[in-house]
Length: 232
Image (cartoon, rainbow, N blue to C red):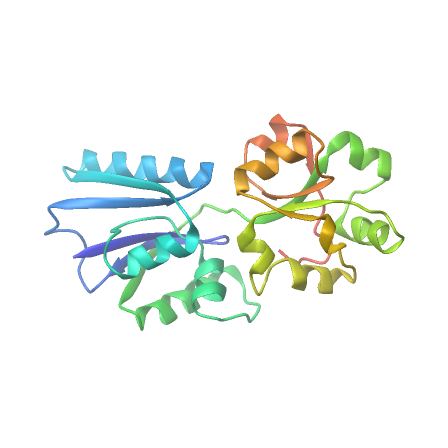
């Protein structure tokens, strides 16, 4: 039977297609999205399965929607997914819940599609907004509220985002609404996730969408802006 692994922004666990696991599988296809964390997790998952005696193929570097479609069609057996992504993007569920309740809800909704989430891991990753530490200090920006005030006061700050966050129903627009500001749309640059870090490092943009656990944040001397309204 097919098997899909899921990693939540708040909680993580294995996601199975069908009632049984991979006991009878001849070959396991491990999927992964197109950013570093996902590629690492795909490699780790493949190593674990190989150690258990499975033959494994790895198909990493896929876009989120493409990977989900591949999972639902049985082309991918196992991959790490975020409960926030599954809830909001694939199940259109936008209620604010606790981490534990998010996990319970996504497990329930995906079960209707023949997907079974297993026990969550302790892994945690979330979106954050980051700036170069030097620039943030110079502008007096510590929090997203500080950033919002600067933009509302007329600062033409540029923002780099991946395409998914830009379009997500819990993405850029709701973030702006929560904090009461709006980037000038000509100053919002959409690019691949990996390029956001490089653009921010090279000061091609002022603010970037990053993953909180990404090692490039400290390595590139970025500072994560405090999410003082708890949006993420």
